[in-house]
Length: 110
Image (cartoon, rainbow, N blue to C red; front, side, top):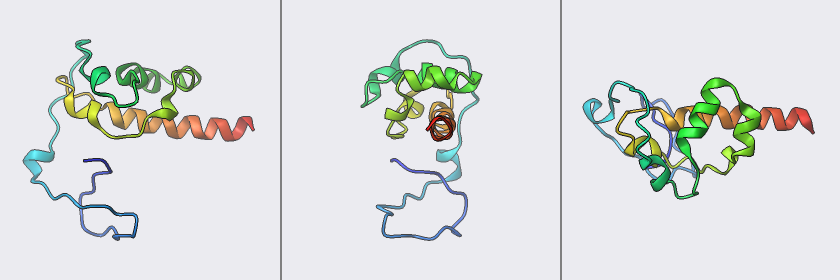
């Protein structure tokens, strides 16, 4: 279940759309975010071998150069980390945000 969540059907379906998943509001709702308990589930489930908890923390605190050196751009945005997190942390949201900033910083550098 990769992709971005949308709240309404006003988004066009293009040839790049591989599937549409419709779920109830109860299934889509997130639990209340809590502090990371360092369980390592996000790390063990990451198909790219990244540390999503670290990448989220770096993005949240604005350490984008460090996030870049920790290979934030390698993330394939599968969402597995957010799905397995027992603390309901928005890992993928912050990683996407961090990737966007890192991309902009790379453009400025070059």
